[in-house]
Image (tube, rainbow, N blue to C red; front, side, top):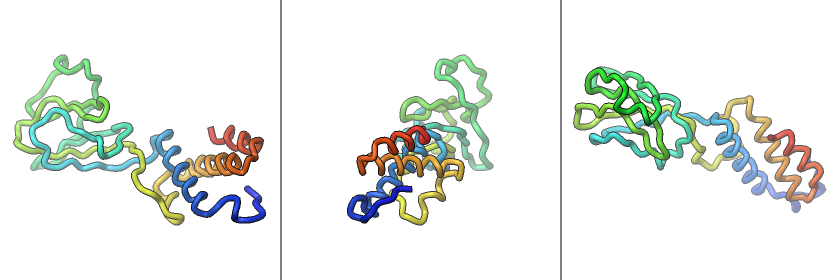
Length: 168
């Protein structure tokens, strides 16, 4: 797609960096990079920080206790104090900035949570594994990103605009 006479104008490392950047941007915009985050031995706390986990959107939350797990319902923050609560096991949650707030507080000293979320990819990918973490439907978006910024670097602004329009 990009016809270049020599490798001196666009190095392999630059292409790899563009692929990594494209992968991360597509994953963030599409919320397609999902993972399960396990938070164990949480001391009694209503707010659980997810800063180091690069969470963009929480899709589902499970409360893990000694006899099993069960899911929690997502609510809006203004519902706290106005919803029926059945017991002392967490039943509701909401995400606010980089914290997840649960309601009610569990009646145990420590507890575990499983967070199913869309995240910012936190790895630098190699040539062989970058497409395995993103659904196949988004591979073309990564390609269009790479072509856009490769053409821009090569000062082929017309081609860069064409690929950018396909990318967005």
